[in-house]
Each structure stands twice: as C-alpha cells, then as structure tokens.
Image 1 (cartoon, rainbow, N blue to C red):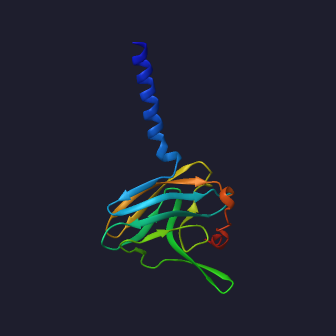
Image 2 (image 1 turned 135 degrees about the vertical axis):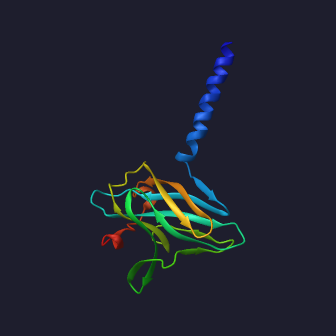
Length: 168
C-alpha cells in the first residue's frame, strides 16, 4: 500500500511538472498551418510608454496568410512594425496591410532586425518573469491568444531596441 501512495504522489508531481513546463521553457503555438514560436517581450522601466514583442511565424501550409492585427490587455494598442536603416538613421514604421507569410516561409521577429510587434500605451511596466496575453489576428487562419514571456533586457547581451519608439 505504501508503494501505491508513493507511486501516485510521483505521478502527480510528474503531471504538475509537465503542465508547468511549456510556461517556463521555450514555447510555441499552432493555428491551422501556422506555427508561432517563443513569444517574448523585454521588461520595461516605469514611465516607458511602449514595448517591443517578438515571435517567429512559420507557414507550413500551401497558401499565404497575413498577420493583420495584434492586441493585448496590457497596452492601449498594438501594431506590426518594420525597422530599416536608411543611411545612418533607423526608421521604424507600421506595416501597411499586415505582414504576409508565404507558404514555407518563416519570419523571425527579433530585436534590431526587421519586424517586431509594438505594444503602445502600456498600462504598467512589464516585469521580467511575468507572462502577458497577446492576441494575433490572421487574415485566413483567424485569431489566437499566445502567452508572451517577459524577459530581462540585460539577458543575452540585449540591445537597446526601444530608443526609436519613445515618441509613441
């Protein structure tokens, strides 16, 4: 009988650890033929009005789709932005008409590189270790809510990728 209870306790612990694992490790989500990988944002400081969020989107289907909107309850608005260097000036602007993801294409949103999601009008600072909801709206696949891990900006030699967004 003792072994039975030990075994049940061990199974319960294993189940609890497995349930918690996706939240504490790299995480991904699937919507139709789209795979959304490792949504994360950088922690912010008090008074910072905007934050960048980053994801990867892979289209494993045979038809293109388009990310047409983003929203989160932690921000007044969300936009899909692109960043490009024009001479010595970094230009960031909203992507008109959404972001197309072609069949077989993988778009990796990363700090200082191409595309990112802007969360503007933050209701409070984003703190390292917290998880925030982010709703992604696709033209064909529909909507999905993903969990965004807020990470310490000092981790992994992070760049200051928010300088250009302080005007929002």
